[in-house]
Length: 251
Image 1 (cartoon, rainbow, N blue to C red):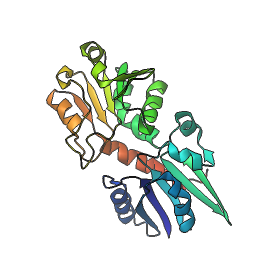
Image 2 (cartoon, rainbow, N blue to C red):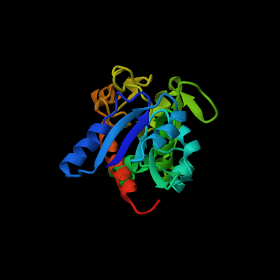
Image 3 (cartoon, helix red, strand yellow):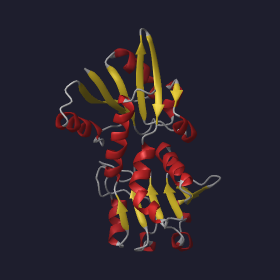
Image 4 (cartoon, one colour):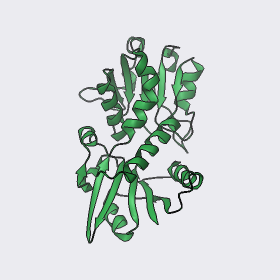
């Protein structure tokens, strides 16, 4: 039996186990299972891997996408550039365990935004949050030539606060991406603290939170006529990319 799973903390919001369990059933994959491994600290990762010789792949979620790097032996070039890993491939040779790190969020983000990127209408974006998922969004937007501003609760060099998002900024913004956990189950009524009356039909809102599918952030945008992109589509895209990585001959 090949085992896969998800590490992060907490994991009550995650759909990954349900997604892969359904995938294995529908595709008649009988030799695989998927479980959640809520780690209160990333330092528990080595013990988890050593404790189960059948464990051969892990997804990584909040808050460990950057922290996990210190345990990865070989990092994929794109993941290394970003500084964020959300897929671990585990290889065991006798008593030697090697961890290979990848980032499937890149695929999930770029494919979710592809219809808009192909039109060439995206010029400027706001990215809410500066964590591991934000780094993946930044990478995709840089690669596709979209300018962006980072927004967080605290200002720092090259980072604005939510209070800085005024009408002038919103008038020149095409895409707004939420990479924070705001709005995620069970705190479904929370959302980034901006003036939602400044949203118009020209704005595209993309939320990486997928539980619930329509977050408070997206709902507020929808009420203003914005185009919305849910995180559930991204979840499916990045999950399929992770499955491809785990089953690839390449490390």
